[in-house]
Length: 197
Image (cartoon, rainbow, N blue to C red; front, side, top):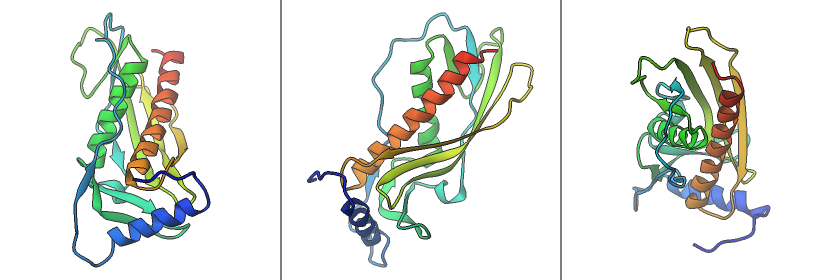
């Protein structure tokens, strides 16, 4: 892939690429993508807090293995030949769980509470947008909410993050989307560290 400097032509090039993928022609080659991984961290020790994170809910358009690209302010399309390696809700959960555990060495993020003796709060997340946009940015938006160990819910927190695509193509799109997930993980980790039950 030839890298280019971000400019006004990047959104147009990406739109043209996606248009080819969602046309009426039969698929030529299926390419699947994982979200970017993070560097491995040491095994967590001395777990003091447990956070149960149920499966992430996503908007209907995102609930598949197809990527979503906004062609302009009105048109949103799903890809045909370039797909996620698994349904997007699964990839988002795995990616966010790994990122949170890496940022919170004394907190365990999991789907269920395996240690009843350790108080467990709950973190629910809804994703409304996870796409590349016509302005050459990747966008992630939605809402997350925490419940303490007693079941009392905190006020929902809206989030909206963006990251620029560094080059043309779907690999750059996936990389930028990974950066938006990094931003979400940092925001949640900061809140958990500040308001630990």
